[in-house]
Image (cartoon, rainbow, N blue to C red; front, side, top):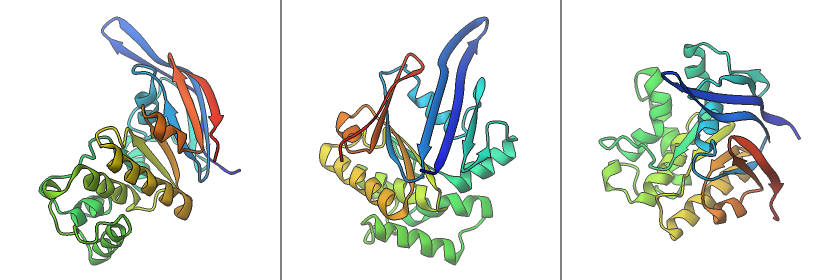
Length: 231
């Protein structure tokens, strides 16, 4: 199995004045290309911090990170931004859509923002992605007119805009009812299988974890267990 993510010895300590708070205490995390993995743990276990470090939103206090064979923990701010935009996709619990933008404009944003404009090719890809996630009839709706489940499907389409190989999802079903959550998870599994996209899904939902191929549990800033789930 080809490794897509290889993180070793990750530590994260936050400072508040003279007070030091260790959150990660030597985490090793490896993901193979095409894996669908759940990241579990109680509040305060370090899940969101680990996701933010892998997503290049935080710099670790110690440790190394390779994504697709490239060392990334020491990249400059500009290089980190470029890498994050082109190589990683993000899905958040509250989707973070731009309320005055249409579904199409929200999906295209990761490509349009760096370029400074929305091109015809970007719009075409965004609309193809919306068709794929079942929102072909909502392409020109502003985000404020979409349901919670629809907004999260837009967020998944947006995460796919630049064809990333690694998609990081932070409680993607946490704000949804069971039916909408099941639809969003089914969509992520479809993308995982059809595109061979690798997913790391931070979740409190045992039903989400059961439908992933592997579950990793953090406890007190360390990996407490890593196990494959039955197919």
